[in-house]
Length: 95
Image 1 (cartoon, one colour):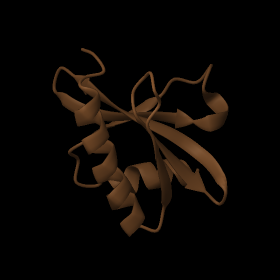
Image 2: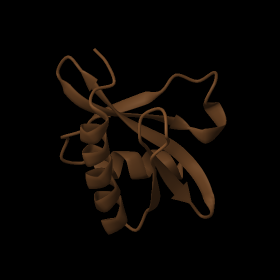
Image 3: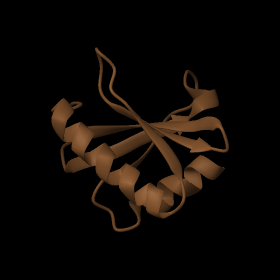
Image 4: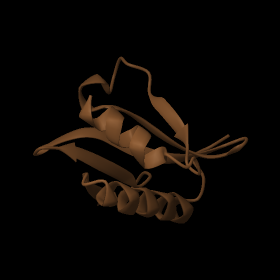
């Protein structure tokens, strides 16, 4: 189990960003100099969740937590190839 290849993480996040765009959700892909790429999902003008793509034993997952709970609340995850992944994350971002 590990984070995985940053280029593959990027590809998964771009696909998710496009799917969220089709639902009317604003996103921003962040490519830090060090660390994995991150997809920020916005509600209004505020970043609501930060999503990373993580490789686990059974495949790729998107992992996120609300912006206000970064240190103390456990993250949530969904399989990256799930049919309704964009709907799940859009709902989480609006909560």
